[in-house]
Length: 305
Image (cartoon, rainbow, N blue to C red; front, side, top):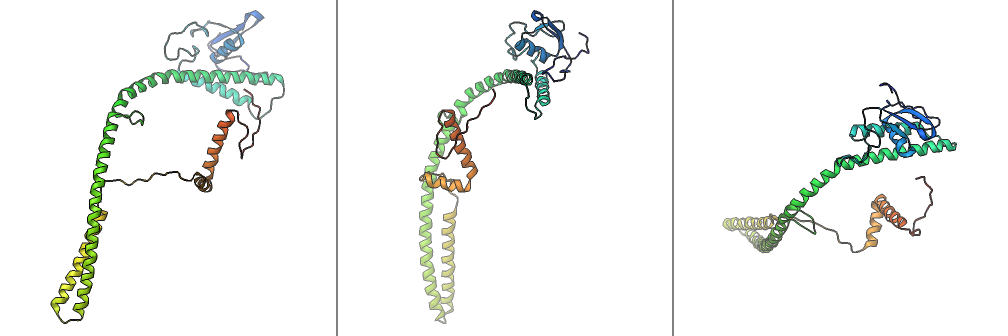
């Protein structure tokens, strides 16, 4: 095989040759077929799915080198152990899919066999990529699990297993909430007292103003005006007491008391989300074998696998 030989594999009766640079020699000695120059991807597919013999007449390892070392990517085909190799393999298969799947229907058994072969190649490329993804991700998952396992008992926020700081904060907030509610009641009571006092002073001031207006006594008029100002100040003090900071945050949470009314409301205001929820529930029932749900029709479909 020369350095510039290209893959001769045809992935279907009417397909052009693969055209990727060849790196292996493939043959079927038992039936006298070959040899053919092939790229890594086509050679691996031929060996795995079509019983081909791959000659190791190049620097890369053979397709079936025996047990591999337990290292990241050890469960991958030997030629697919780097991201770039995997990416090239997936993109090559996708390009072949673009060639075949152009909107035309399958017209004969040969074309169907070619598409079946293409599907096998797609699955092989996907399996190799998934294995590589797991090989890279699994060690990180182990590290993350170890980190979480060490820190969750300290600062975890899980409801069924809160960490030490979470429990301590909850206890502090419970104690402070009770205390601040107590202070809030004191402020409300004081505000109510001041409000009543302001009302009484306002009545007294109004009576003094009426009496002063009927009199020529300047001192009485000044005293009445002072009473009006005092009543206003007391009312302002009551307002400040009512609206002052309490250290408590007001929150709201819903409590479902009438599911029918709630469903009717959201069906009118968020209909698409309700439909999606209903479809999810019906799909789950369908997967479990139920075929009769009010409001749904069930359509039988046949799909290739």
